Image (cartoon, rainbow, N blue to C red):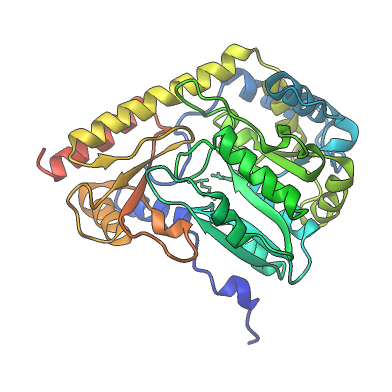
Length: 386
Ligand code: PMP
Ligand code: GLN
């Protein structure tokens, strides 16, 4: 038998799938993979259901339902003051994962370099390598997870085609500051680099911090693609509805990839997300407040169980420092052990690094019902004798 593609064959099964299946095997409380255990806002789900029976269930336009593209453009204006032409500057994708793949396949040539910040979401690097491009890493370290202009200087070069960044950042739970964004924008302008911004957690920002899209910084509007996800914004991760916003000239090559990857996305889900994005401001602030309360609840619980929790500024996640908790085991071993023995699953943070990975950090997911968070904490406390 001939072998599969050598780049992709080199990767194991993604850590999210591995830990979720292990959690099932051990009937563990799954605080690993990032998905809520509720069923999303009832009204949004209702629109999707109604559209299934009353709407049009054939291929929608390749760029997405006009109603959703209009809603994405209106959302960009409402939250970030961005003027976006929904006809030429918005494309709907099957989740942010497909949006990322379409951006990378659509823009990269073999030999191009891509600047990335690790820890990073696990789909980025395999797709970059599969496109024949070369990743160049800036490694962020806890607890600040920040970088300097010199770090950027070391990563950018004449072959840099684009930078792929993520704020709020999974798994670090870091929200990039305006100063950090300005430093990155300066580097993009100096090296004539494009930017692909994974902003799936844009509405999950805590403690009154703003979410600032890189696209809003001077000089960046024409060179940035911004990716959002209905999965995160409406707590419906299985829907896989994403959206890419960017200048028409930049979006066109991305659409060329999208048309051959998935071409389109289920119309009833698009219609429901269009409805959802038009909800009043209170929905979005309520989502952030709810998640912030869950962050606080899980942080308090993990602390009471004897674990040392790092600050979390946004996203679905909190990080625990095993060394600071007096645990010498590696992150991967510890996650397997607590899944099997304590009945609580978490994700080893080393899975988010390509090199120089720390092995003493683990990630817990906070976006669960309070009773699920409490059950996980109770099991950890019992296991650690607290
Ligand atoms: N980017 C980041 C940083 C993520 O955490 C996720 C996770 N779900 C995605 C992209 C993928 O989003 P989607 O489910 O919309 O494909
Ligand atoms: N983004 C989710 C996480 O970080 C997982 C998405 C996936 O399983 N592919 O947990």
